[in-house]
Image (cartoon, rainbow, N blue to C red):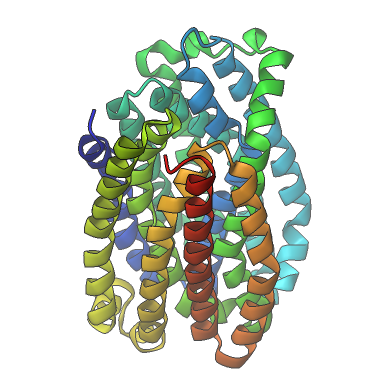
Length: 415
């Protein structure tokens, strides 16, 4: 399958959930007060961050399961491990919920509801992680139709379940209860597809398979964790500096910018196995040129539209009260989105060359300066400061990975 066809299939899997989530966020902004709205979006960000508890096994599963005569026990091993790690993460987040709510300076009258909401979000972890493993299983078999069908179903159920919960109870806890129900339904549907549950028995899990998955996934996890922290901690830093209500003007535009990054990722999901096969120099260059064109095609038009029409779009999406404070934030974030979109290309090339360790070290190098910069800019500029910190970090990541990929090509003879 050509990169174009792979990208189109993956784009559908990425765009349809976003198309559902965008109007849902607009409705939530109107139905909930500013603090509750911010806490719901923080709960979503918490799930995105906690997905890293798979320790890189999902990414490793894709490569190892695509090899000839792959071990069929890899899938049940990955499912069992992610279910256990999800349970551990849920326990820790359950205990930490009161501390997190206190740190966000939530109104004392709403603190009990906020704690209950965060705890319900924590319970979704052991349901989310196995769902991601099942999607990776179909990626490994290059059945992009099935993998993207499951991504669409799971991605649409999350915002719709949250919306139904918010409409039912009008609180953070009711919204998170709806989200939890959507996670359970998504996992059940994924297991029953083509009777996949028959291959998912925990009794088939093997320690040897787990060692192989973790050995490959370790550096992937380090890189993903550092990157995810830099994509989510900015709003928490802003909350600590300005209070939970101060996050609202940044959280929705930031969530939109991060969701848009699924567009270039859809391209690189098809690029990764092509480069991992280590094609000859001219063929590899052809794949890279295609990927740059496709990333530009899917990233530049939405960035230009959102940047030039930020005010009207935000008024239509979130309502008039958020349009003015969030407009410069969204415009800044769109610049950062473009940098982050193109950074996916050299990042994918580095990982396809088996140098996930190099990318991980770069991301760790970026983490400290980013957090210091975000803290300082949030204090000085509020939501706009958080946006500038995120944008500058993405620009630095693009430049660093371009240099790293070029150096690796020179070392390996230009392939």
